[in-house]
Amino acid sequence: MKASVKKYILNFKQASGTSRGVMTEKETWFLILEENGKKGIGECGLFRGLSFDDNLDYSDKLNEVCQWIDEGKQVEEIWDMLREWPSIQFGVEQAFLSLNSSDSFVLFPSLFTESQAEIPINGLVWMGSKSFMKSQIDDKLANGFNCIKLKIGAINFDEELELIRYIRSKYPKEIIEIRVDANGGFSSSEALFKLNQLADLDIHSIEQPIKQKQYDSMADLCEKSPLPIALDEELIGVVNYDDKENLLDKIMPKYIILKPSLVGGFKGSEEWIRLAEERNIGWWITSALESNIGLNAIAQWTFKLNSKMPQGLGTGALFTNNFESPLDVKNGHLRYDDLSIWKIDLDQ
Image 1 (cartoon, rainbow, N blue to C red):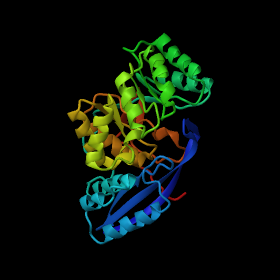
Image 2 (tube, helix red, strand yellow; image 1 turned 30 degrees about the vertical axis):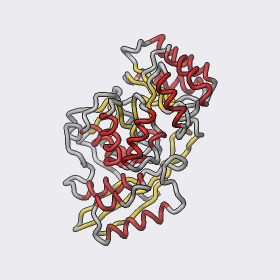
Image 3 (tube, one colour; image 1 turned 90 degrees about the vertical axis):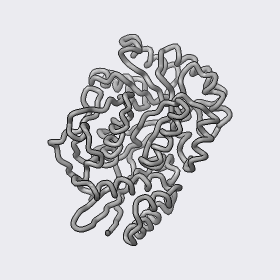
Image 4 (cartoon, helix red, strand yellow; image 1 turned 180 degrees about the vertical axis):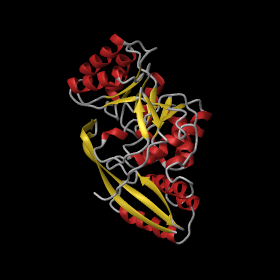
């Protein structure tokens, strides 16, 4: 078996803002396997500034993984050797599944890949000016989304509340579910006050209200908040099974949000799911700005989990140079058009 890697820069159609700053491009890497005339591809969805494995020697580690594969090491052994490299774990899982599938892009055959079923997803509203965010909201509502997720923390909080009131003036919670994501943007001292204001607007949940690793503060907030709290960034870098248990027991959130690129791929995510369900903690899956190659893998795997909640898988249309794929978003659902074909050119 021969393994190689390829770097690829995804360019945003327009600058996209979070509380961590504005992004215009996204680096990603592809692991390509070749054996007996077949090819497999997996995406190592590195997220600079957020990934636990955002290291200067990232490309060196990828080349080392290629050597392991060339030497005959198998996916389970390699995955265990990459506990500190969750995005590479994810790429390795995909690449082996791709190589061993009859169709290199159908990793988990199902009614979804047969175009017989769809995945409900949230409509994502990026940070920006009030007018920019309002135009995104109107667009999502017009395109049939019944779950809207707003990234907050970039403009005045009162203006963000106005935007949410705007949605609620049109649609009650029974019609439109609203999620908000603070990306750790609230201070510990102000968080509970802001959560009380959000709760008055029938918000479904808030992701990561304060920065991660403030364990006592987050646990206290989860206990006192009138609004369900979902952990997101808090899960990044927690790679050992016992540490995952301890974190959930300490904080006891209502939900956890799993980004396979950031938490160790399918296997790492399934560890979190198992621990969460043992504690009656809800969960959903979110992409982390992967190309359509990574998003395709996440979507197919997510469908097999049989969750009825809207998932966070609608980011494929953000880039100017994403790959043409069977993935399509329509009426607030992600679907797979099995009559469409992939068009992939890794050269830029």
